[in-house]
Image 1 (tube, rainbow, N blue to C red):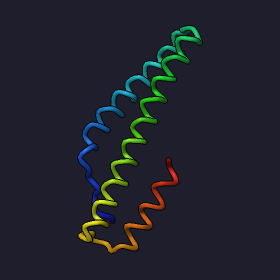
Image 2 (cartoon, rainbow, N blue to C red):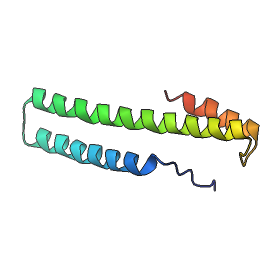
Image 3 (spheres, rainbow, N blue to C red):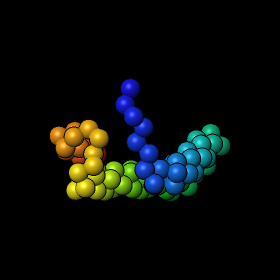
Length: 93
């Protein structure tokens, strides 16, 4: 099992994703209640934007973290591991 990767941005990301999860629940309720498609689409847009922003923040924070460790040379897994992780996460940009 790999070690946990906790970054300073994670608590804020967790809160943002919990809010997005709540909004998604609201979208489901809106559909069940027969709300207008425009209202539902607007709410879905807000959920999508919140998730996209959370992903962007997570990736940027991780890249900054990897680069910082690589520049200082204090990485635990070696430079090859840091580089492969860096390459892997950029696929999700």
